[in-house]
Length: 239
Image (cartoon, rainbow, N blue to C red):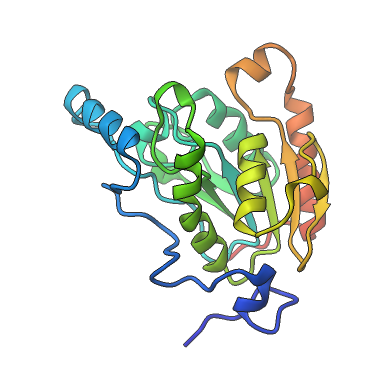
C-alpha cells in the first residue's frame, strides 16, 4: 500500500502538489543514467581513466525514515563519483560528516576508506544533479533533467519535514521540485523558509574548499545551521 503522507498532508499527492513517487518520478536514477549526453560522455572518459571508481549516478544515502533531507549540488569527481556516496571522499564531505556526527545526525566513524563505519541518523543526503559534471558545474538543462529524481526522492520519504540546501543551486532545485516561486524564498546562509504546504527549508553556503578557505563559510557558521535544524526537529530521532 501507499506509505504514510508527510506530516500535515491528507495524502502524499497533497504535499506541495508534489506527484507521488512512481514510474514518472523515481527517487533514484539508474547508475548508468543516459539522460544528459555531456555527463554521459564525461562518465565514459572517467570509466576509461579510473575503472575502479564508482563512475555513475550517485544514489542517495541515509534511512528511508529520515525527517531531514540534505541536498548538495552534484558529485565531486574524486569524491562521490569515486566512492559512490554523496560528499564522501572530498573536501566538502569532511565538514559535513564531521558536523553530522557532532550533532547526532550520524553515528560511527567518518573514514572515506571505511564508509561502512558511518550511518546517518534521521537524515538522508542527496544531490540536485546525480552525475559528476565537468568542472563541478552542471548546466541548467542537466539540473532540469535530474529534477524528476529530486521530486521522487522527496515524495518517497514519508516522514520528511525539513530540507537543507547546501548552496544556491541546491536551494533553487528544491524550490523547483516543490513548484514554489523562487522569488518568494531568496537564498541566504542561515535562512529558514517555511514553505507553502508544511516543509521547512534551511540554507547554507556550500561547504566547498573555496568557501571555507576564503572564510565565506566557517565551521561555526555551518554548525549553527545544523544546530538550528536539530532544534527544529526536537533532536535526531534514532531509528
